[in-house]
Image 1 (cartoon, rainbow, N blue to C red):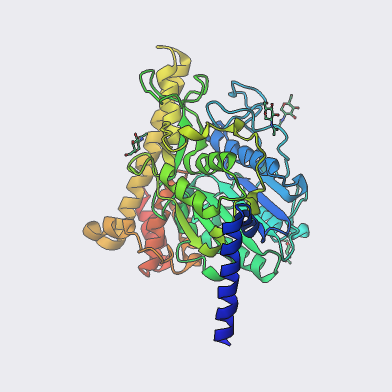
Image 2: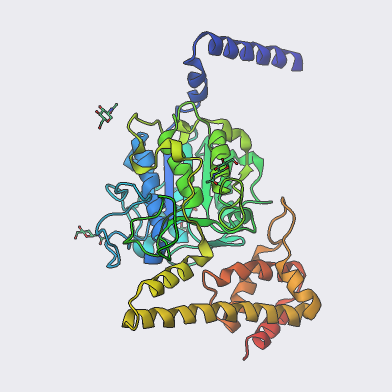
Length: 470
Ligand SMILES: *[C@@H]1O[C@H](CO)[C@@H](O)[C@H](O)[C@H]1NC(C)=O
Ligand SMILES: *[C@@H]1O[C@H](CO)[C@@H](O)[C@H](O)[C@H]1NC(C)=O
Ligand SMILES: *[C@@H]1O[C@H](CO)[C@@H](O)[C@H](O)[C@H]1NC(C)=O
Ligand SMILES: *[C@@H]1O[C@H](CO)[C@@H](O)[C@H](O)[C@H]1NC(C)=O
């Protein structure tokens, strides 16, 4: 039996290599043989507000890529709050760009789920094609079949084990995984690819997503690493972005996120029939690492799930490129050395306020207001940092507290053993210490470690109350 399989395998390989050798075209035929089903995509911007311009710009650009690749609007489902194009702060009303030299990516984007319809419940219902679970929006759901390919792209802020939506509850990693498992059980896809941009995005899949679901996930960063906004408007006149700054009127705003624009500018310029997801991963990892300097301006792109899927051509998920493709991007030559200003996502609000403050005329109301807001944000940050530190001291002692809260589990282990514990302890913390902000949610890892250390909920409540009583 095994012998016979081997013969067949060898025969198949020989056939493939003969046809590759005899005719250059065959390699692409081989690569595309799996693309017979329908291609579906779900695109999600998880934030709202002018300061977060980049997430909706990313999603709009992703739509243009898929549309140019031949996917039909009926198969592309877009979640975006839609408060950017017409924002009073937008220097180009009705237009969204995702690159300093880019064209309008807002044009034609379907508004399937906008405003408060962009929430976790609708996101899950759409992917599971549960029409009765959808509230508001276009009602479009992922009605995929067993031969279909699905591409999901999500971009936003994130924190350990959690991503958020502009409205309603956050999405914890276990909930995302349970949803994907349900989709797998429903046998309504052949292969599924998930690109995720967020701070700590690796923590959404690490130690959680197994190989067996035919799902391949690529994340912007390791489980304990920031992801970065890019094409960020200079904060000072002397700051050079080497030609990659946004137009000057976009002060303090990042036009895109580093991992996101990197995969998209790659998809814009590559031949998607012959280039695989794996090839894209190699190129994207290099640029997202800021030319392998990582450090303060880049992150480690990660892969999870079934890596065999990554040897599919890009075209199997994103469609095929037409010849005229580069209008949303910088040209291919500048790709690998692009060095625009990057700002870690948790610092983008500060970056915006500092820029605003610096640019406001001396003595103006605008300057005063920016100063006040800046002070407020800084003091909120130090307050939540202090609260969490205090809580750690109370629970584990002044010596061990910091170490336990900040410890990172080895790769391959999930953030927390008991997700329900994490969710309830986050709620306990918020009850006593105030709601966690985008910045404050970085401490979710500390709360996970409190669960992992076996602290009871009574103790968690009592110590949180004490830590945050002043
Ligand atoms: C933005 O403004 C344009 C022109 O006034 C209008 O057609 C469009 O509906 C507006 N979009 C949103 C999301 O408000
Ligand atoms: C669809 O969503 C509704 C509302 O959330 C839920 O009650 C129902 O169980 C879901 N159906 C399936 C098949 O998951
Ligand atoms: C590409 O764009 C150029 C200039 O706009 C045009 O002349 C050419 O016909 C286009 N080619 C294709 C294949 O669409
Ligand atoms: C990236 O690294 C290469 C090789 O070390 C170097 O030639 C290039 O100038 C670097 N690019 C940037 C933007 O630092």
